[in-house]
Amino acid sequence: MRSSSRRSATAFAVAVIGLGILRSVVASEPAMSGHHHAATTAAAPPAFVASREKPYGALVDDAMAIMNDGMARAPMNGNADHDFAAMMIPHHEGAVDMAKAELLYGTNPVLRRLAQEIIVTQGQEIQVMQLELNKTSAAASASH
Image (tube, rainbow, N blue to C red; front, side, top):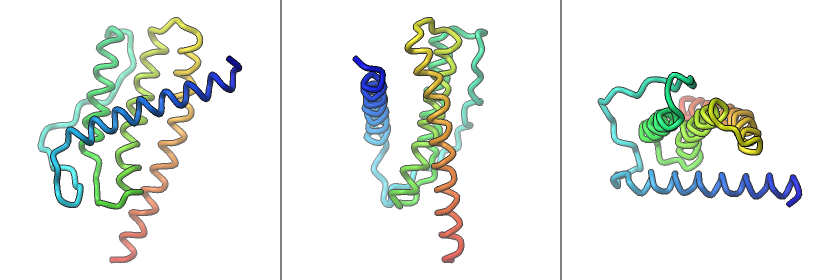
């Protein structure tokens, strides 16, 4: 398989997995009017720290717990664009954290390169989504 085809196949696989995770999170949420997330009083998990002080499995568990918590706490307002970005930011942050764990422990050069690409591309996508959220927040504030 050519390099660009392999990258496309990998990107597609990552997207499918991401959509599957997003669907499972959304499906597990209780139905609420207006699609607002329930307020939670539980403390957010601590920030992810990529370190060899923990085994790989524990790092990935931490990354997923932080990601799931961030997605559950995402401020939803019923606007598809806003809610998409609000949910995808913690999802992408979780992918970046898992990629950091791969770089600490992984030995497969193809997967290590993919992890590096995930850190760069998803970091850029996070910035785009944050900018768009800021725009929609500013527009909503201006209309009130």
